[in-house]
Length: 170
Ligand SMILES: [Zn+2]
Image (cartoon, rainbow, N blue to C red; front, side):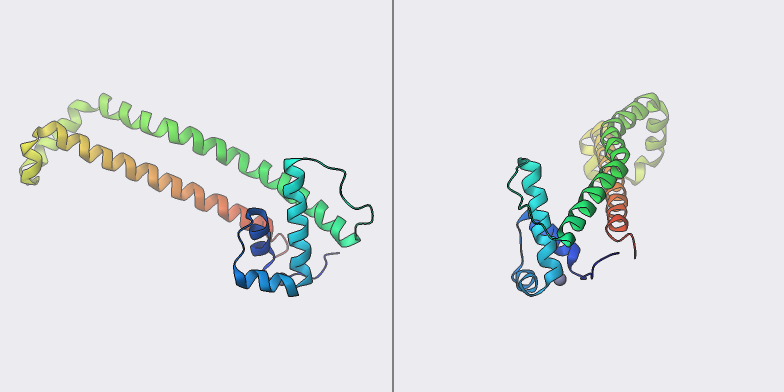
């Protein structure tokens, strides 16, 4: 059975974990028993992560214990679920530029031919630095854009996963 919920629960959770409260959220937490409990449990979790202690009061409320078990279960599930994504994004951030560089080297002749074809339309400034500098700039921009798009996509996917785990009953 799930105790009553509050819409600002996850907001409170993040604030308590980071210690960064907005005035409005603080005021809400003072009056909302659900968020008080969430903040209490989150602080307990944060403390537990730093140093496992015996200071936990012996007579914890049933709701408090239930929430703590939920927090631990959610946290473990999230770690498991996002692990492959974390590894993949790390590999991609290293392999991406390498693959790009490798691709440029192996297709150099073709790229040069292609660029020569379009060269008459290039801005005058690029020609003053020669063909090579223009080529390097354009591929740096392309590489940065590709990496950027990948990072954004991975980040969006991860936050979507998190949101789904935070609201399993929704
Ligand atoms: Zn609340």
